[in-house]
Image (cartoon, rainbow, N blue to C red; front, side, top):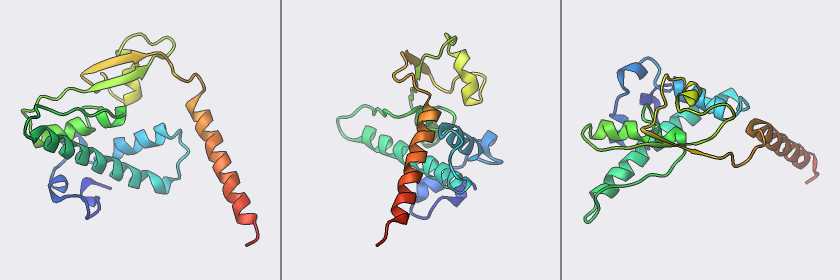
Length: 172
């Protein structure tokens, strides 16, 4: 799946944007990998490609909304508060903003819960498959929920499956 495979309802100006050279072979490969990892490997294969396409389209549309908002009379910029997947420089909203205006001043911030034994930004880069973090700045916070998010997600999926099975067994 490539950017050219985005649905027809995505605005033409977004479809006209082409991936940077490093993404040309398979622009959504890294996006798909991130979706698999962020969903703890629990998603059906059939959902991964469409989710990557949708996330790329959402990033492009958020970039366009920021451009339009910053261009309004009386405004001198715009701010997006979003998750790390959307705010990373290499393929999130900042990438789409730079494609639209290479001279624009864009600053990205990644929020990170501090992991045990990881004290420097470089300690977190491997989770992004990069040598350095794909953000201009990072802000470290304490861990909000010490429970393993993948274990929690697996339990939520199990409960959803159980509910679905119970609903299917009920007579109509």
